[in-house]
Image (cartoon, rainbow, N blue to C red; front, side, top):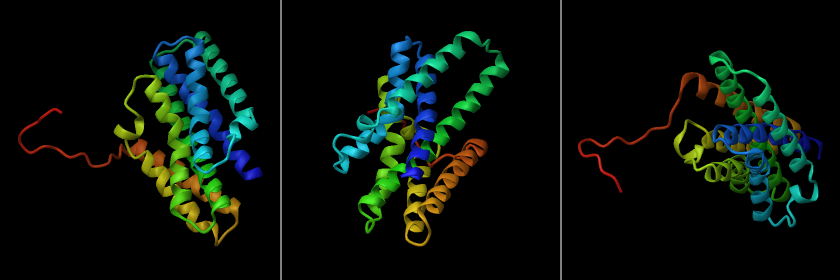
Length: 215
């Protein structure tokens, strides 16, 4: 399926980049950086495939995802060693990271939803959850390996963007073509993430009225 492959490749490169950047910031060696890049890029898709009974997972049958992830990690490492980073350069890297992460989130939201809707077109909860799992699964594994609190548990509107994108794709699936539904979902997630980052939107965090306690 051409639409699936387009978004899959886009998501793999974007998430491999974000995984490699996290590995570099954690001062890992090139093997550790590559592992984070691969896990971030293909981890969510593997979890998705196992949940719906696609055995072996798509990534293991079509290894271009692993190959692209490794190449991306090597390129990021090369650029990190050759480019001098000023304060402006660091800000640019942060912007590129946010864009890459948003593109990966949107792309894998699409591939997850497509997988669910292709296998079970009469359901709507399953495609939405598969969209979420595909989009954030690799990032959760990345953060655990990097000893970070997973991004989806502490940062701005992240997982919610994937959920809403999955719902939109599911709603449009039966009234438009697969391409229209996919691109609408992709654009929606990317635009929502841009707004979240630009306006610093945050989900509500309960604040204790008097006593602050620790568990």
